[in-house]
Image (cartoon, rainbow, N blue to C red):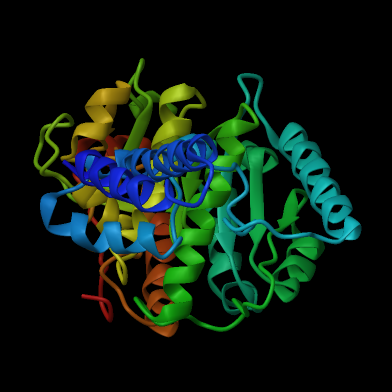
Amino acid sequence: MAFGMLKNYSDKMVDNLERGRNNKIVKIFILFFIIAISCLVLNYHSDTYILEFFPNSYKSIFSQDLKQGNLIPPSLSTNDSNISWKKSSRPENYLTSKKKNQNKLKKVLKEAAMADKTVIITALNAAWTAPNSIFEIFLESFVIGNNTKPLLKNLLVVALDQTAYSHCLKIHTHCYALITKNVDFSGEKLYMSGDYLKMMWRRTDFLRVVLQMGYNFIFTDADILWFRQPFAHFYSNVDFQIACDHYLHDSFDPNNDPNGGFKFVKSNNQTIQFYKFWYKSRKIYKGKNEQDVFNIIKYGPFIKKIGLKIRFLDTAYFGGFCEPSKDLNYVCTMHANCCVGLDNKIHDLRMTIDDWKNYMTLPSSEKGSTRHTWTVPRICG
């Protein structure tokens, strides 16, 4: 219909212009005009491709983003989320610095990786690396855990600010500085505050880079204590495995309540595509953290389209304050989830350490004959 209107309009222009102008030149001009309009229409429709993977209620919001140039279609996407979607001239030293950071990351990943290219990764800021804070308790759990101390050589600590990086270098082998320009991640970030959301999404995009470099990872929040090696309780032939705040006793059930603080992800095409999609989805679900967005997109068609295999981990092995493991004979990790405030976390995590130490002093016969449980959460409860 639009093309018919354009044609009628062009015919009228020709009739009016034939009296004093060269008819052939005018027709050529109008032909190019119609072609240009057609290209603009086709380009607009191609930009809306990504909308098919989102609920209808969000399409109007997303369309507005497209019109304003806030998001580009997948065919034009870039691997570097820090580069503006608009064309810009970056100084040469920016590209040099970017390359140096990539080389540093490749080096530290290679040094920390297991034989199968799996790395344990945690990310923290200055507030969590301060003396007597979360980081020291986290490292202590590896030392006192059952055969977990050797895993420290496979642990990469990603520091989100310079203070955290400097402190990490003093007490740990593998540290990487993930500094974000013009953003201060050093202080305690209140749950769901603006800086908290930026920090969570920055972390998510960083993990996508790790996957693209060919490394599998076990991501662990630093408020998760490690007491046993987890590998025996991971599922084979699964791309993406994630812990739960509340587990429904079915590892396939998407209605499980996942927690993004602990996950095992293999590097392959499916997980790389998923992490790109996950990160871009923050544009649709504004004001939500990465865990809340995951809880939405896990039901969507994109996961099925790319063939991503997801499983949810049992809280019997990977528990937390939301749903504590019932028996210390089986627990691998303990997470200070369902707990707001750094001081509250520190208090109850120290009690968790004490519970484990008391358990480890028991004779083997007593450990096996009785079910031993946690005394936490206390303040966090």
